[in-house]
Amino acid sequence: SSPDLKSMSFYLSQLAVYGDSKYRLDEENLTAEVIRKGKYIDCIIIPEAVVFNELTYRVTSIGKGAFYGCESLIAITIPNSVTSIGNNAFYNCSSLANVIIGNGVTSIGDYAFCQCFSLTSITIPNSVTSIGDWAFYSCTSLTRVDITYLSAWCKIIFDATSANPLYNGAKLYINNTEGEGAGHYMPFINITCPNMEEDGTTHSIRFPDSGLENGNGNG
Image (tube, rainbow, N blue to C red):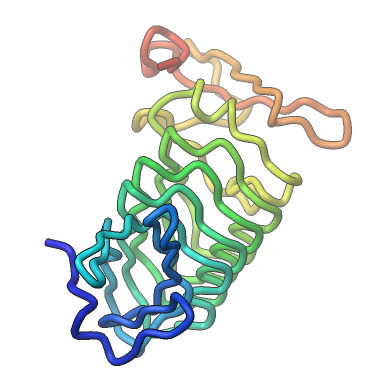
């Protein structure tokens, strides 16, 4: 059920505080943006909607720097209602190890998960179309990036090479199939996407031919 903001501590200038977060309310569009964490807790589930004065506001974005420096945060669940994760949203959440991104997210901002040192894997929803510069920079434990369809991966626009979560050596998994580097000589196919170009050089990732849906993982 949606949180009832009638019990919040204050309401001022379209800002609402409830539980563990502060929201900016858009009264015209009945949407809400998470703009700041509240108390430091280890796990946060962002609601799909919040209620104030009998009006329901759909939570559609995680604001710029909303959880910046929340070093105690270890898990975050972002609902399907959210479409954007703002710049620096989880910057230096050094203990953050479990991230669930809802299937409505289309954009991940600059430095969004920068310095999330405990993050070992991330699943990118098929809905994502853009990832900002250095979004996963210094995620030194990140070894696995999952997405369901190759076609979804290929449509992502990276603001720079450093925006790609594979930048620091993580491996890409398409529908749980691991991409491999050179040196394998059995039935692998080379996959090249426009977003895998760097300084005029096109790179490719190889997958077992039998491991991708329809032979190429397209959805």
